[in-house]
Image (cartoon, rainbow, N blue to C red; front, top):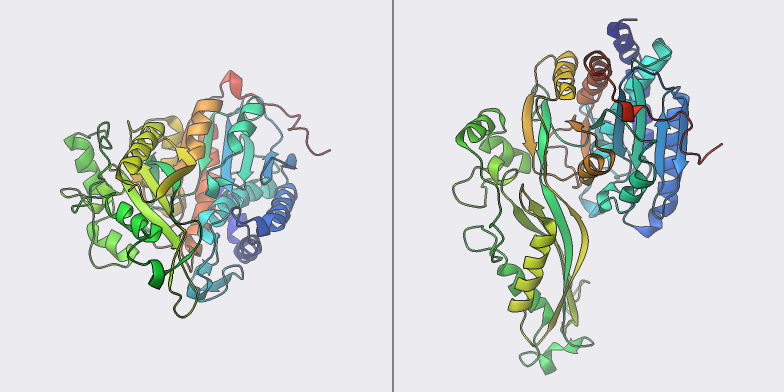
Length: 475
């Protein structure tokens, strides 16, 4: 059956697909908050049920030491390539709740957008592939190739248990290529294939002072305030020009030749687009770099949050005993996360006054990655975007981090195609997150075409034969 017939099924089921996506978003799957552990499990059960309903040969929920992983596979067709679809069903915390125009876990449609936490990152993008699989299975009864689905619930906290899972089930997860949709394109009429991601380190910096809160009238001016010290330390992490002030931080940052910089300037978002999407009037950062360059080929350090002292209404005259800051580095090629962590620890120790104590807790790390643009799967993705969006995509760098890309390469030995369907102003990680529904439908058509093109362009490798026995968790 031609692909057009598969796409026709998608066109006739638009409203149901949106209703099911809204049901998916309704689960408050905040994996970082223990009070949502039950919601995580219920969502994993719902997602497993969805994969069974669309007609996949096997779908199962696999328990880990953290949140469940949902795995599914099609009936294996020997002699056909295998695609591993990865996504995550966990979401960022929704706070501050008062900043939402509608409750974050009561999704609503307004002006062609579905609003809700996780609508774009990553439930909506993940769901495009599930619906593409349904379109094939409900029209042809089979897929043009082999499919394995891997959906985890801990991506937003650094995928702490995924490495072990991939190592334990390396053979079962064998594939020729992986596809991930968890990143933005430039605009609805400007699709993009992401070919580079920055690495990351997330840390918590603690400054400890007195063992208890002290009266600021009695002790103010005599006891060093840890919240003040924390702010002073943060102020010394950058120089006045936006460069990170940690000695040795830039020693191994990769530089790029003029042809790469010219290509980036030609295809990337403009300065005005970036500022407009951020809803600010003026940019900031390292001199002599564009905003697109600063967010992709240059490293960064962000302060994600500060906690210390009294937070309630009205005054409370105290010197707090503890102050905490959450820091996030984004790293570029040739920067080793472990080396950057060592440099930070040394720098913080050197600038911490003896009147307080500082401590750093590393929460997760990920290395930067650059993918091969000439790979046949990249060509398949390029053709698929043209079929889905009506225009050829460009190759785009992304400043974000997806730890699983390195894991898939290092553990499973498979390349990854990064096919985003989100928009830069989807408010990922922010209040009023949304997903543009025309991108959802175009994404389904793109995924349908991608599977067809991979089946046509790629030959399977021996190690990707996989297994039809499943992972042995459910009967």
